[in-house]
Length: 487
Ligand code: NAD
Image 1 (cartoon, protein in one colour):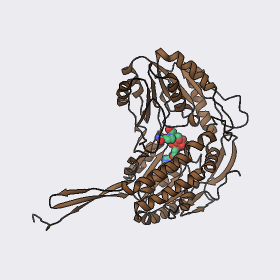
Image 2 (cartoon, protein in one colour):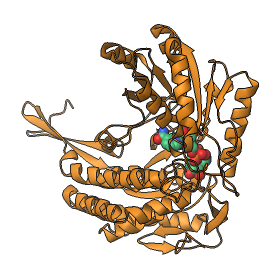
Image 3 (cartoon, protein in one colour):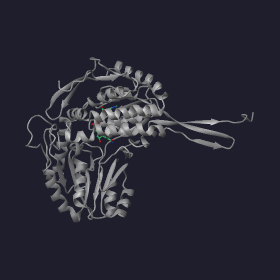
Image 4 (cartoon, helix red, strand yellow):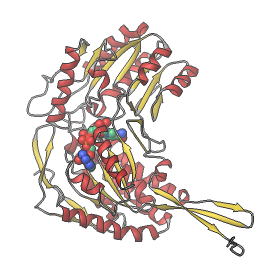
């Protein structure tokens, strides 16, 4: 088989198999072909992975931050050297075009290892607090064993965005990729060993929604970081809360992108297309509710339609392809049913709306789709579709659009396109979201915090802020005199 790994799991520095686990088939979305067969973790595998992480964490945390940083920076270097190979694997795992994976997936994982490897030598410092004669100091210490659970849209990136800050801070991790995309994380685990990480600090186990809860509720796990949907987030945060574990929740969204009438229209269209069609629309922070000022609506839609119809859909391994298939048949069916709802509820189909004629075979392809005249109450304007379906809504007034943009349970991201900078800042100030963009969309370099508010989650990934979510403060009070008591 094209992408069969040596074994399903990577524990304590080695590939491990347990064929008693349920079979997980890895399917190449462009053809529907099975490219690898793996097994979900059995309870014995889960125990082995957590025991290995628990043991390794003690040693790893005793290394100086600079020494840990060297390993992470080395891992980043290896990832960059193998960018082509890793990108090809990511394309097989997800169906995303090589044109994207070569610039966005392993590279952003490498950025993460490089960034946290670089900052950790100075970022784990505590403070000294004078108290008159006495004094106190704080230390930032790791949490222990962290569980990472990934979604299927950015498998390698998620494995690194959780692994890099967790390891930098001195934790060990057991990472479970999505059952839909099981392959990439195993390579990250291999690379970390090659870069000099002690065995057991980064383990990968396979599994699905049955496996996840066993990891979350394990008593030796101190923290859970999930990237997934809001319903899964509620379950995972609930289970973690019952044992008072730390959590980071990177969940779904239905983010607004507001285009004012003074915006550079072509730039705003680029932002809307990036924020709806990249990765075949399977991006959590997508600006799927595009509010366009009535005065520019016709021009916006005419140019958007032409550019959308020019997107090159096809074989993800062809460098010229701009859009590949959806990750799975189930996800494509879900998106098609939302498109049907859009049509039935009276939205105007501007372009797309079905399966492209240009591609043949069993791949899970779908046309990039634009709906106009979408109203706030339509299902396609309220629910996360997670596919290439852009909803264009009209507006005329600034206060009105802010209120409508905020009228959602989600709060992951938001964007504004305008030439008026005071309006841009005034509007983003009022939009309820964790990550916002002005005159661009969906750029998430490792230097900036990323994460959601409201039902889109809590905690932040990337930037120095992520380290706070993988460590805690230890405070030491130092008594300099005799201890006095009233008794
Ligand atoms: P999902 O919620 O179905 O699954 C996510 C992961 O959770 C998978 O690994 C799954 O096996 C696991 N899981 C499911 N039930 C579980 C349980 N009860 N306990 C523990 N683990 C469990 O999500 P998905 O379909 O893989 O991904 C799509 C969703 O992820 C979308 O909603 C998208 O918006 C969101 N997402 C968010 C971000 C972000 O950073 N905010 C990034 C990517 C995707």
